[in-house]
Length: 62
Image (tube, rainbow, N blue to C red; front, side):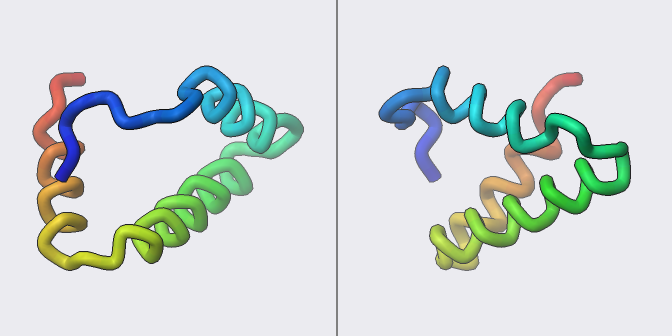
């Protein structure tokens, strides 16, 4: 699992993510997030890396 910044253009990605949620209600927004998570997880593919990412996200402070 990469823990250092690995984005090529984080600001552009963030803008795209925000734009994708524009006009969606909460349920649609949550569905978009779930679909995106599954697509990105498919790109990673490695079960151990995915498990580490899930745990790291869960352990992050609020």
